Length: 113
Image (cartoon, helix red, strand yellow):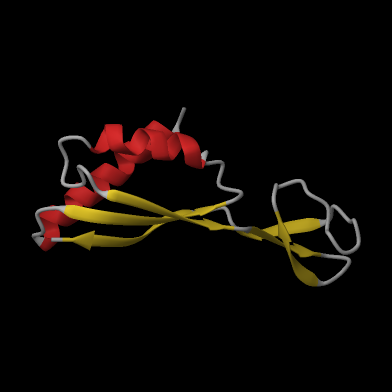
């Protein structure tokens, strides 16, 4: 379950930012997670509270924005939304798709005090 390692990385980023910016506590964390990122959102939510214990983000509220996957369809010459990396184009059925979005996970916002 690599989601625990992701939570550890998020914790480290927040603690580094707390030292640099001088805040004492994170009250809310907003993440954007792409549909094609390979992150299991339920597992990340489960691990978040456990990993954040004893950190600046203990008891922080976790908000997750799910970002859909997108790809460029070569035959259609249009950007289409996809749920999985090997989906067919919903318009023409082609598998000649180049993924263009939905692969990332980013910390969008921290609410701090």
